[in-house]
Length: 205
Image 1 (cartoon, rainbow, N blue to C red):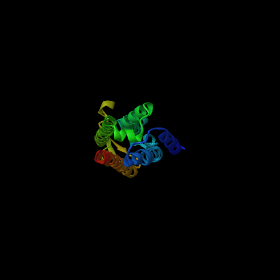
Image 2: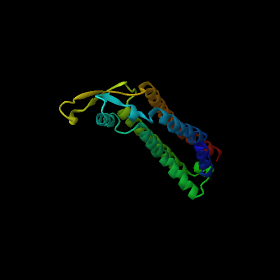
Image 3: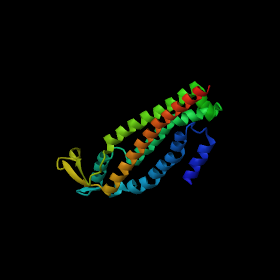
Image 4: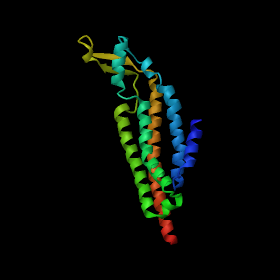
């Protein structure tokens, strides 16, 4: 259902002028959203409920979980997708309003430059998101988390907490890193394709 909605929305907009851009938008974007929406919920959906500390008290579990996850991965990745898609969506909305075709984007320098800027912005946002993801989540989810609970009282200093399904979360993290890297590679390749096709047009003229 969601993939059909994405496909219908995509077909109603101005398509990217490059083959790589179309692949990225329709196929890779859909796969990434499906992976996050379905598998992300399965892996992270009930994490807070199964996160347990010693002593196993609700207020301690909640305090330590908030320390362990300043932002939940699902929320972070959802925001990442929205923010990364924003430059391209803005350009395509502008192109649709101005009735700019795919051919015009490659033929007119001003539109070509605008499109390249949107792709460069997408790359920059992916790089920032990649750095933030490393800072927030690292590359591995360890089974044991040491919670600094000194602010809860003198009898609590460092509390041991068990992280549920840590191996599955590690695999999912690596998958999301891989998606980000592939996206950046596709964006760079798209810029080279645009430059190549522009040169071909200039040679023909």
